[in-house]
Length: 110
Image 1 (tube, helix red, strand yellow):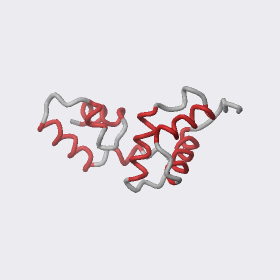
Image 2: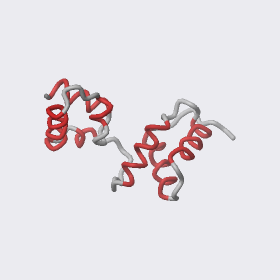
Image 3: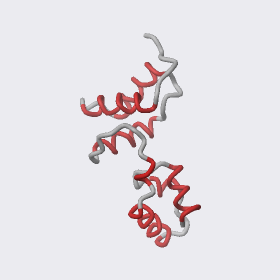
Image 4: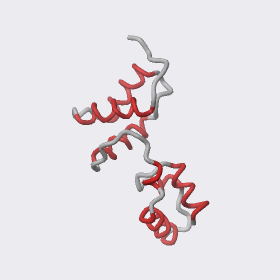
């Protein structure tokens, strides 16, 4: 099998969405991605997160940065921090936003 040297994140996400729609587990999807795109493609945890995102109803595979910093998400993060001052960025990102956006909201906006 040939390993692709050039690929986009959207292409990989589309593959994840396709395999998820077929009922393939996140671990198996990750293994297939590594076979095709190489070991640096995406972590198993991120593949599972994308599967959850698609399960929650997301259709698009493009990165939508604007959606992560909505007033609703800022409010949710604020509530999380007020409930637990020792919360981690990983826990904030469980809202379904990227670590970068979680960090941006907690440090720059709040």
